[in-house]
Every structure is written in C-alpha cells, then in structure tokens.
Image (cartoon, rainbow, N blue to C red; front, side):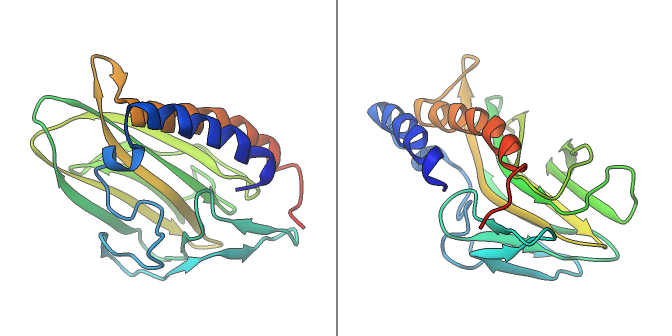
Length: 203
C-alpha cells in the first residue's frame, strides 16, 4: 500500500482491533491471495490467470496489490471463468461482501468483457465502465441460508481484469461486526483515494 495511505489504514485497523480481528470475521479463505496461489478457491472455465506482485500498465506505469503482496490477474477470453468459495453461515442473517477490482479497457456494454459477483448463482454486482488506471471497490449484501457460495466471474478479451482483498462477513442489526466495520470504513475511505490515484503514473 502506498505510504500516503498506510497511516490511515493503520489507524482504522487499530480501532477495529479493539473489538476483534477483521481477518477472523472474514468467511472467505485466502481473500487477498497472500498464499501466492488460489488456495481455498474453486476455478471453473477456460481460465488464464496469474498471481502477481506487480503488472505493467498501458501508460507505462505499474499495478501493485491493493492489499498485501499478491493480487489475481485474469486474462480469460471467450467466456467468463468463475472463482468461488462455499462457506457455512447463519440462515436468515445478513452478510456483506467486498472486494477490489482493476479492469483494463473494461466496458459494461461490450460482450467481450464480463465482470460480476454472485451468491448462489444470483448476480449481486456488475460494474459500470472503468478506465484501466485505478482499483475500484465492489460491495453488496445477501441473506445467509446456512451454506452459501460466493463467486466472481471474469472475462476481458482485449485486456485483463485484476482482483484483490475479498471479504464476506456478517452484518448484525444493520451494523457490521466490529472487525468488518473497520474494513468497510477503510474500503470506502480509500475508494476516493484510489479514484484520485488514477491520475498519476506509478514510477
């Protein structure tokens, strides 16, 4: 994470740690791919992926992980590849999910590009058009059934999609669990910074 964002992240992480660990609240395994592989994820489709610490950008800059060291790069063509995890939860409880995506040359109305998130096969997030110079935050909510499957799909024939920092956690009484609250504040706070960051090439 860039140094100008690190202090804000540490402050929010510290406040979340008072009540509990954000990592402990996350129902997804290996959400930031810090194992350096896809441990915990089931992959289906004509997949072409890589785990990256840095990728070159079309303007000569570089893409770095939104969280930690690694991020997932997907260059699937022809049809979407899906990455999924199934987890136990509480039936009737409300859950939130979040993740970051970096979609090169992505256009929502181009059939050769596809990026979505779903729970139990129901799409709950599809982005609008993006440029290729920033991480974007995706969020959504769903009601637990006792056992649920979170999945995201990716296809980008002319370029590639990149993903990082996936989380699924319970929201209670309309307010996230303490650890998740820190994640959400951090996510929304940094989304503006990420959008501003696209103006600058990374050395």
